[in-house]
Each structure stands twice: as structure tokens, then as C-alpha cells.
Length: 146
Image (tube, rainbow, N blue to C red; front, side, top):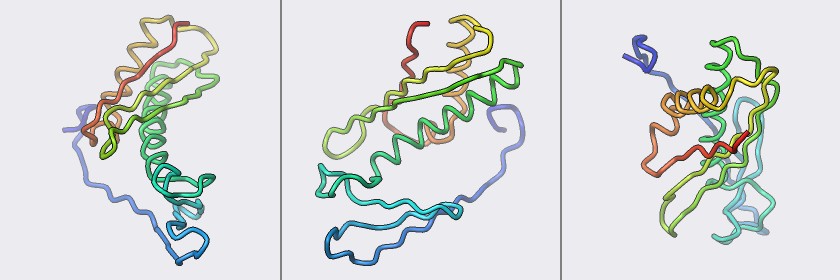
């Protein structure tokens, strides 16, 4: 059974990675996702030129995006109208692996649901996030005081 009590089912998710051997950036590649292309390379800390998406940023972004999508769905299910959602997530590595990812969502509502409801929604979103459930580093949601 899934987190909502529904029967689980297997899904498949794909991306396409293309490397062409760019002499100016030997790590340069393109990530293709549902018709969109994203220029990528290694992070500057690992020899990349900067200015392109890197796997570490994409990992942190995927955790944030998954949390946000669950949060929005849960809020909608409770008839709470979200007017804005922003996050500046940050991942920490120890040199060989991620040890922590901090999500820092700021959510605007048409009517303030209160701190308790906000915390409940973030907890439920975190519990349901497929990406957070798949990683072995600490993922924490740091909700700023309203």
C-alpha cells in the first residue's frame, strides 16, 4: 500500500544525457527532460566551469521540487489557497556524499492557516516525497517563523 492507503504501482521515469566531447569543457553535457534541454557540467568544486547545472544542484533541486509538489497537493486537498511558494534549498557534502539537505520553503497563503497547520503540511509533504524517501542523507525542512 502507498502512503495514502492506495495500492502502489510501478512507474518508470526517464531522462536523456548527451555528451559530445566539448574541448573547452570536457565534462559538458546536455540533460534532456520532456523536450527541454539543460546545459550541464561538473560543479566548479569538481573541475567544471560554473554557469551550468551540475548533478549536485539537480539533486538538491529534485528534493525541493518533490516536497513543494506534495505540499501544494496537500494544501489543495484541504482547500487552502497557496498564493506563492519559494525555496532556497542547500545541500552539504562531506567530500564523498551528501550528508544533509536543508529545505527552506517560504509559503504565502490567501488566508494564513496558522503555524500548526503549516508545520503539519510540511511534515506530511516530507513523509510523502518520493525523492526524500529514496535517499540516505538527512533531509530537513526549515520553516521560517511567520
